[in-house]
Image (cartoon, rainbow, N blue to C red; front, side, top):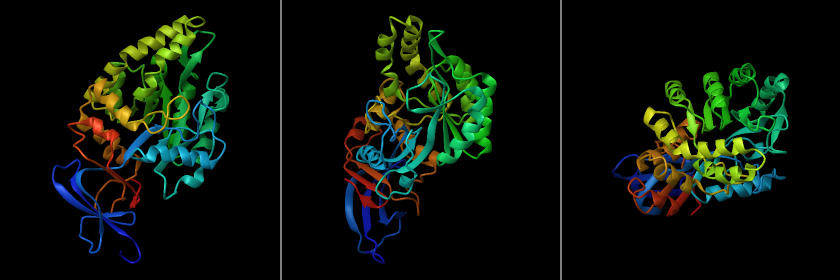
Length: 364
């Protein structure tokens, strides 16, 4: 105990290094300097900064309906927390919950406001729908509604065409991205379609969500720009079910979705090889359960061939640095997960955290 604050002690191999180290956690701060009287809560194993789900929706309940209370958002965030996710980027919420930004028992939060979507072409009740003429003004409002992010729905099915199509014209989408950046926030862009992702990457979005339509040329541009890819492999696994529902009425769309799903592991592999920053995101909320970051990590490894060590980095310290959550440096935040085996040689161990500590408090 130091000045009334409980001090915890953790000993293990602290990744990304390879040596056994000692950490002392004084409240929400890490130090490598010994603190007398600390309580040892982990001795052995492999220690990493808390995981991040970089594409998550704690404002959407299972089944796709908006939540109706802050308590629901809290409960969903706790599911992720209890799986070792100690940082969340909520990529669009139909329900505002700014009071959770500093909640000391929940993962650290980066969040967008409402999804900005085309009129009558997106999930009912989830997005704020806009024609081209009102989109830029909506971006400015939503820039203030989040805490650093705006979410654009860059494409969805266009029923009159029977297939995916960009949400707005190219000039409008580029103006929307520019407006967000002028407001001092970053842009996360949902995109499945080939044409939409081209427009959005050229517009300079900060992160491509899903990105099934990426081409080799665009991957090179993303790498050069530092544009992030959040593949949401778990989400892409649902494309066959979406296609099966569309077979009768929209056969072209169904075939397109199946082709995108088949080719996606190669897209993600090419992006990784080109040096595109890739982070772990489950798209939890709606059709995907919360608490599945470990499964997303394993899919990135098994389906896209990303080395386990790179997956761990993308799910932990690199994602935390990108979002400003901090890592296990001297004076850094006291968020960590301990695993009984080395996740770089056995990635399945991410399903089995032995200890979870958030803001210096033991969760598991």
